[in-house]
Length: 248
Image 1 (cartoon, rainbow, N blue to C red):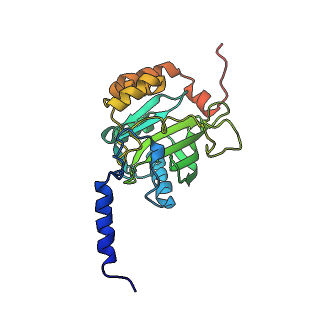
Image 2: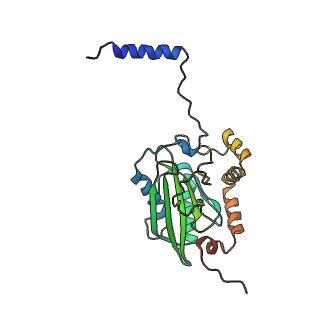
Image 3: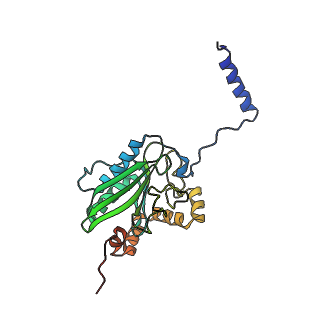
C-alpha cells in the first residue's frame, strides 16, 4: 500500500535538492547542430515529406502541394550543381518552380527511406530531363515540428557522392561530409538558421564552407547566378553522367 505522504515527501526532497545546488536542466542551445535532434514523427511522415519535395520538381504533380518547410529552410546542391539554390520558406517554392520551368523534369524513380538520426529522410532518385535520366542522392533534415529545415543533394555518380564506400548506400558511416550536420542552428528545436548570430559567425570563422554558406544566404540571387555561370554549359552532362560530345 502506498503512503499518501510519499508524493509530498518526494516533492519536498526535490525542492531541498534544488536548494542545495543540484544541477539545473541545461539551457536550450540555439546554435546546436542537427545531430542533437531525434525524430518526433513516424518514418512514414519523413518519407512522405521527401516525396512531396520531389513532386515540386515533377511536371506531372499538383504544383499546389508542397512540403512543410521551415521559415528559414535552405537547399544546398553540391557541384557540379549550383550550391545554395533555395533559401527561406517564402523563397524556396518560387525558386523551385523557376528551376522546373527552366529545366522541365519528372521524377519517375524514387527510393526514400527514414532514419533515426539526422538527416531523417534520404533518397536515391532519378530525374527524367529532356537530355536523359539523372540519378541524384538527396537528404532532408527536419526540426521537432516536422518542418524541413535543410535539403542537400549530390550527383549520384562515382566521385560525387558523400559516401566513399559503395556499400554505404545510405551514407551511414561516420565522418560523412555533409553541410546539414555542420550548419549551426539546425539542431535547435525549431531548426532556425540565423546567418547573423554569434554562433554562426564563430562557425564561419573556423570553417570556410560555413563561411561560404553564410555569404550565399546574404547574397542569394547574385551568388546563385554566379554559381550557375561558373558551372558552365556542361553541368548536366557531368552531374547526370551523360556522354559529352567533344568540341570541334
